[in-house]
Length: 231
Image 1 (cartoon, rainbow, N blue to C red):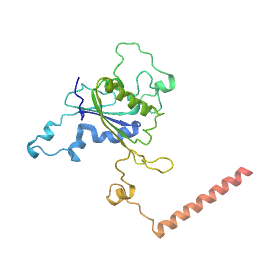
Image 2 (cartoon, helix red, strand yellow):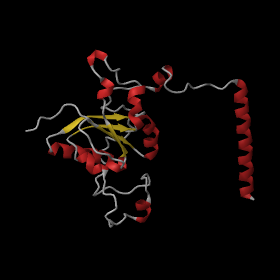
Image 3 (cartoon, rainbow, N blue to C red):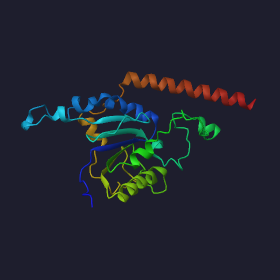
Image 4 (tube, rainbow, N blue to C red):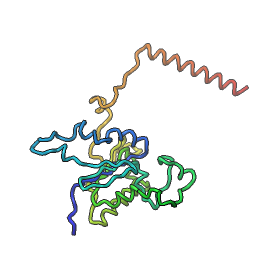
């Protein structure tokens, strides 16, 4: 029996849509975030060539190159990892033709058969990172079912997820209760204090006066429109 690895050399980073994907892609292009953050120690630290040995291959959406034993990062939106036999077309797809006109019939041999969902289901070891994962634990959603299916495929090959990490700015249920899976809560007040996000600024008296004037003018316009509607 093959020994199951505790760690993984392959990483699946999932975003909810193209907009979020494009926002974080800038950091992943050229793997620059790992060198500029910095995450990797300099070569020579404790006698290891950390940066030279960092040989991950980046794959974005359907632009999948040859997967390598040194490791891979698959960056994609969730729709690309749905089961290819059941995934429904959506308005968030890059190509919305199937969403509006139905699925394209498979014909010419020149049509691309590359399917990221099939590729990640064929990997023996994998770590999954979900971005904007507010409801990823909802068992009724296709997102949850897709990850569960990938995990089951890996289990059939005597493998498993090394880890799954879900990241969200709102790790809470509708009733305000925090998710039980939360291992780290980084509240907004803390991000403001540490200059991670912009500081809120209260307007001075002059600014409040201008705002009040605009609200008054808007109210007068709305009243006038209402009067004309009754004529």
